[in-house]
Image (cartoon, rainbow, N blue to C red; front, side, top):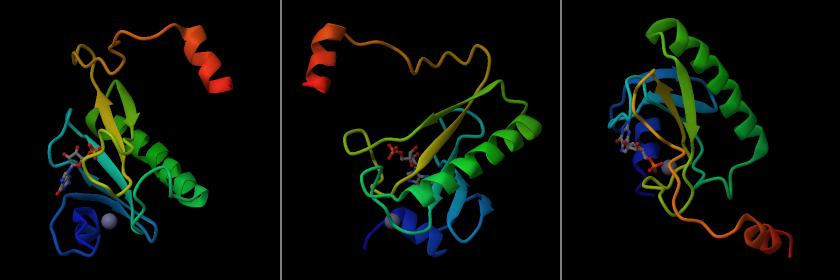
Length: 128
Ligand code: 5GP
Ligand code: ZN
C-alpha cells in the first residue's frame, strides 16, 4: 500500500520522532500550524475514525495526555487543540490525531463560524 505514514512507521521515510511504542508513533508535523505541532499515528493502518478500534483510540488519547504534559514542560504552551480529520478535509488517509499547541494571541480561530441552518432543523434531522 502506498501510504506515506506507513512508510514513516517502517523507517522507509524520515521523521522527527518524539515518542514510540508498540502501538503508536508521535512525530512532528512537517508543516506545523504552530510551534510543536505533533501527530499521533497508530502503527497499524486505519483510514480514520470509521475503522479504528476503541482500544487503539484509548491508547492514542493516553499518549495525548502525556504529550500535553511534555509540551507544557518543554515549550511552555498556553493550551492544546486536538483535531482529527475524516474523509473530507483529510489529506493523509491513515488515522492521525493532531496536537496543536496554542499560544496566547496566536490568532488561530478553530471555532470560526460559517452560515448555518437553524439549530432546531438540524436537531430534528439528527433525531428523525
Ligand atoms: P490531515 O489534513 O490529513 O488531517 O493532515 C495531514 C497532516 O500530515 C498535515 O498537517 C501535513 O502537514 C502532515 N504531513 C503530510 N505529509 C507528512 C510527512 O511526510 N511527514 C510528516 N511528519 N507530516 C506530514
Ligand atoms: Zn498507512
